[in-house]
Length: 107
Image (cartoon, rainbow, N blue to C red):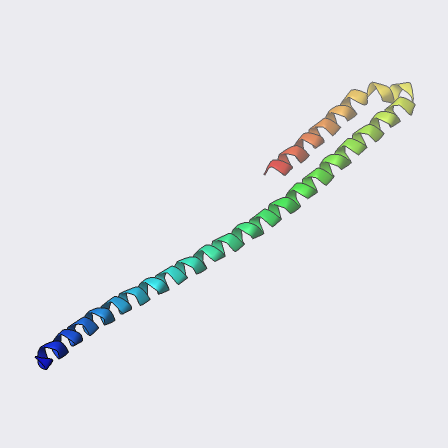
């Protein structure tokens, strides 16, 4: 009888060792997956920071464009009549430049 108990205990121990090995592998896979996801999160946070910096730069450019537009319009009011005739050309050039800055901000 003790031999049967010993054999049953050894079989149970072997099963438990197999299960332990399987669970150990699963834990390692989960740790690897967590590490991979952590890297993705860090990469995404870096991308968010980069995009915030680009947005700030774009907003600064947009503000500068608007300030320059206002200055040019004020100067146009003060210049001689012949130069005022060219106001449309200057305004169009400034509008084109502003549009390029907007497109830069969208890329």
